[in-house]
Length: 510
Image (cartoon, rainbow, N blue to C red):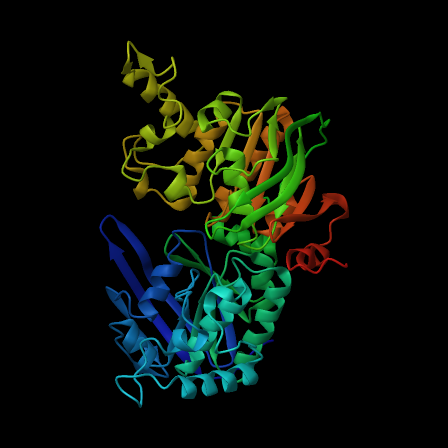
């Protein structure tokens, strides 16, 4: 790593300011990237990273400031203009059409020499050349739905390289990859940098930022909080720059006395959306006073498993789910809640909140019918407001008022509302799925401390997460899930990142 002072500046942004109604997303931001370097853009959610990159890619236009590309002023008005200027963007959520082949996905939107048809043979040949040159190893004729998450990521990079991108923006590219896939991706990215391309890397994961970057610029509240290099920084100093205070990166867990199994799952089989088993004959115990982490790459049955435990998905005959001695295998979600199960879903906007409802309404969403909040069949608005105000304060939810529509809050604050609602009932069993996905580092620290409080209370906590750092930091035991099965359960004291990464990828002999 390390760039020479003679390297050309590829992109330069000077004094960029972007305003939206009631908020300044970017204020007087200077940022540049050179040929042959990785320049990381780091910051909490809402710090202005995405807005700045959307200006680069033509999705937004700056209100003030200027953008220079290869030393010349440029006004990029659309993504097609950005692509024509040899700027590519790999989004966090893949922009691929699963039923189509790799070649068909790459060809989408391209003009063809065989109008109105696309010359797929020509496209496939070029994809193979790009794959060989950059070690991307993807078969052009394979349908995208058959590919692993890591392979889909490579297709997104191939799409950008096919369009001859000299500057590539990577938005949280490692969010759903195993540690080994991340290592493979970083080899590919460094190869691209060695070819003279400029890369802008956006990530929350501090160890990855330290491993890949040549330079690091931190945004906080829309302004540049500082710039540094991996040689001059530590994970702690980067976190402090991001948040503006000291941040505990690893949750502090005291010793607790572990109790009996509060959640017992035996021979659980669950059919997925494609009509085939997503969970296969799975057995597991979660003890009182422990956090059991389920590690796995997205799409290995975790979502179906969690929905079955929560009562949102049917299970096949022969499997059982028992909570504190009560068989809840076929019980409704209400019965499970009344018995002490709390559920933080993976998709907070789809399954965790009602976007049009206020913060207050979402806080009482699951227990609005309780005696505390109803009076003679009507909602007791005074009691609801008092309780909501108390929960917002207790869980440090940043919201203008409790009447604010929840959709206008940041992702971290929406997640805090969900956590506040679920934990306020002092559950005996807590099922938390992707508890800090898309959440900034300060909110993640807070959510982790709340999960550890549940552990200290004696709750049985099941955390399902694709973030291996989160699992390693929180869990007392780690269960690795691969293709719908638990392939290993490891005490966290004995857990090695590489071993768990291999298990997540289905390499069972470690």
